[in-house]
Length: 178
Figure 1: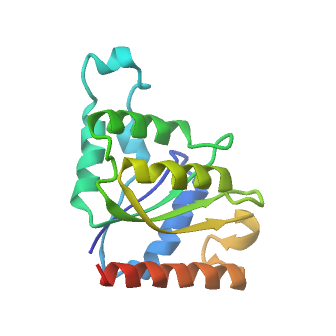
Figure 2: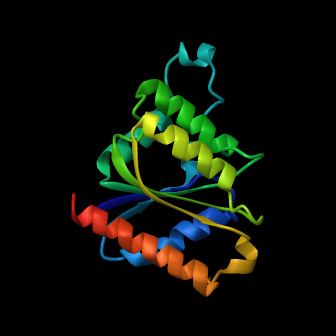
């Protein structure tokens, strides 16, 4: 199984990237492509810029999605929505192919320092990603990141860790049965 993994953030200290890396430990036997959104830096999308052509980075993003079997991502929440970097990449890619996620199975996550764990961006993504070709198999939101996550150990709250491990197992089972 080829896994495409990313955090919807360009921060060098992204807590969503840390969550993705922690979850990927449960997929060590798989082929993993952990991408960094910083490698997909493009001008801000506009119809005027679109008329001049699409950035290579947008095509490359679609290509790495096309080449994977599943997607594991964790979205950063900025002002109750996607980060500007992710939204821009998503906007460009969706203008090339509206089914950005190519109907790939997805394990969708979010985290934040607050108690809602990126719930606003999660709810937005759960609503809209299927319209763009995401086959969301399961979701996980980690609240209060700095209270519930240790950078060496990962998720340290036993109840939350159990929930996450159950969701990972469920996701893996769904992938085996496809």
